[in-house]
Image 1 (cartoon, rainbow, N blue to C red):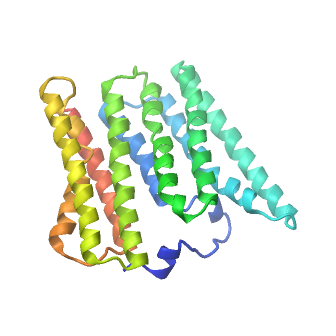
Image 2: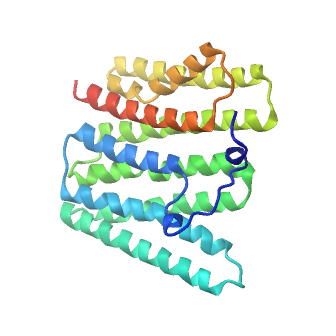
Length: 278
């Protein structure tokens, strides 16, 4: 079962400078997975791509001081100025690294990538303030924004936007959206004590829809509209769902889910790379 802390979403305050790092480990996974997958499939690395990563990382880190700034009370002016200072430093550094990437690649579109991602982050933060019932939508919006690192990396490598780039971007979006869905299903099951059969039906729906999308991509690829490797991203999610259904086990623990998500993201990166270079 999930721990009480995981279910409530509560966490102990972090000392020192650890509060600067966002707690959402899934966000870090999406950002790093998108970046590494784009590099691996393109089989290249440029200085522009090197500078792009800290630009996107700093933009993600700006979420923490921004949320703290919005929550701080009027009786804590010192804390508000502290959060504001950290926020401005991170945004300025993100812009500087983005400018360095754009200058190195001689492509102004790269400079705009962190700012294109910012509205997604902002909407996700606002949804977080509106309550728990908006949590799933918030995670879906954040997924689209975080994975903009894929087209950003593609441009930083000096490549034109093409089908391969969009397959990686949209494929990873689908992969992580299914991961969010699976996680939310387990959390709802643990919170509301859903019957095992209801959880099973939800998992079947997810596994079945992922299978239909994958089969549809394969069929379309047979007519030459898509490469067959476009079907790769949902395969790990399908396997996980069907294995879980076959195991008949209890609801998954939060720590085990976290390890599974890391393993699935790694599998997608490896599969994308192997099949793209086959």
